[in-house]
Amino acid sequence: MLLLPALIDRFLAHCEIEKNQSIKTIENYHRYLRRFSEFAGQISAAEITLPLVQSYRLHLNRLTDERASRRTTEGQTLSKKTQNYHVIALRAFLKYLIKNDIQTLAPEKIELSKIPERTVEFLSAEEVARLFEAIPTDAPAGLRDAAILETLYSTGLRVSELARLDRAHVDLQRREFMVRGKGRKPRIVFLTERAVTQISAYLKSREDAFNPLFINARRARSDTDITLGERRRLSTVSIESIVRKYAMLAGITKKVTPHTLRHSFATTLLQNGADIRAVQEMLGHASITTTQIYTHLTNKRLREVHEKFHTPHDNL
Image (tube, rainbow, N blue to C red; front, side):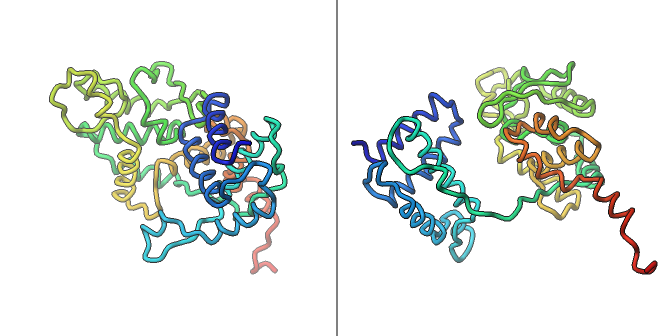
């Protein structure tokens, strides 16, 4: 009879081979399930019971978040969202066991914790204008940064998707290209004319033939060596730093990240009347539920109803 650690290894192999899930997803599953295995001990699948899972969830609720404790003087407990990630991994594991005729707890018996409705931060049109006005385009670094921000705002790309872009990926004539997002799912994204102009200006300023679309400003020993290109590719951390820098220069007090530009992209589309299903496809969301977090920010009908039927107090 296989015990928990061996079954978890089989599940992770299944995620990698049969389900073709991303390395990041597999790493997260490994971390969350290892924590459950350490709590439960050397048990079989049949010994996973609802009382055991409930005890484990109580353990998670009282567990100190090591990453949080590094940033604060006192350790913080795991957030409800992080606890739910652990439960989601456990349910996926149990579903795999049952599918393979291994007796264990039914995953549907485990419910996720209720968490506050998710909110998103986005930039207003005026803040977007200020952000781009803060970028000096009279130097190669400024041309690159303008191209990065225009691409993020034009396409709604995730920062990891942007960092992986090569020159050959982007069709500036058709103003569109394909990316592979979460779960390696392909989708088409579109560039505005302004984004095409900025990317073209940036590429014209470069004297190298490196493959990455966005590279750091350091000069390599030999710009003729194509293999150096990957070393020059901008990391996601560098891109986040660039976005944060211009938000500060623009005097925007809210936290601005590449994902804020992704939120702004989606919000702008919906505010201008775009169909939510189309926005879902452009963002690469697997579920419409994820896209619906934007609808309460963009519901013009509610504003119209409020303005039409709310009576000002001085008219009462």
